[in-house]
Length: 95
Image 1 (cartoon, rainbow, N blue to C red):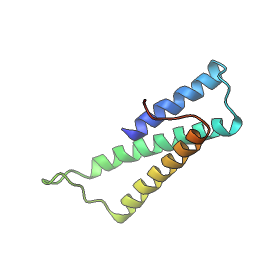
Image 2 (cartoon, helix red, strand yellow):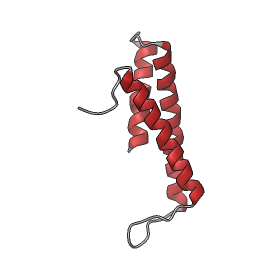
Image 3 (cartoon, rainbow, N blue to C red):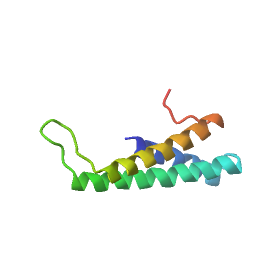
Image 4 (cartoon, rainbow, N blue to C red):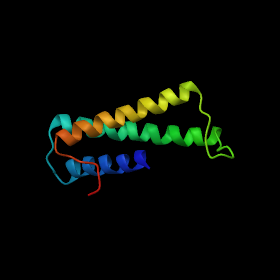
């Protein structure tokens, strides 16, 4: 899951910065914190949606417009952080 992977990655880099003295710039550190928090929010929001919505027989879910907008905002914030980190030479993709 995107949110969990981003959360684990950002938390590990934050841990390395704070505990292992891996040097990152202040802006990168702040972006890692932002990614961590937004990933946690997204993960929890998806868990919340899972409690209220169930798959139809066709395998789809009918979300409200507000829920679609919230999912979109979460994805956008994660994408913006990933783009910033990639430009700073931190890729979240597994190679």
